[in-house]
Image (cartoon, rainbow, N blue to C red; front, side, top):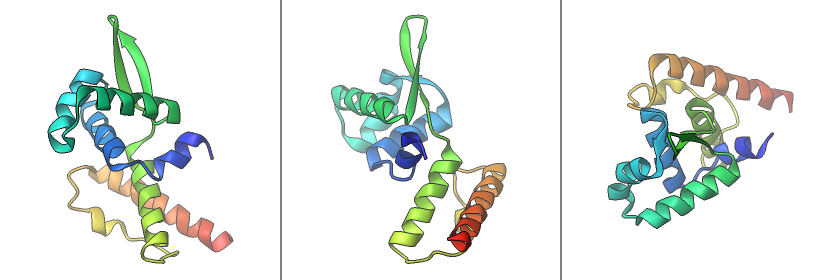
Length: 133
């Protein structure tokens, strides 16, 4: 498992806010990200920049220069991150090591129908891995 995969399981609340902004809107500059999340987090622009730099180091974000402006993109996928967080929560908090129904996510504004199907497949795969242990 790469560092990005390990970090995908446990982004902090602020890291998750940034990822959600990027997943929904695509590539954004630091200013665009800050404008999207600052009201919810009460952050200064410098806090946003520090967090973005830390997320790049962790492999959670990719950067690209577009017309001389650095833009950020999610370096980890939405569905894989949600699957990892769900498995972690189920095992650590609920002590569930078996199948996890994706129906709990059906009203999510974050996931499309195709992403729900992909999430179910990932959660089913984790059940198969648990049986192999």
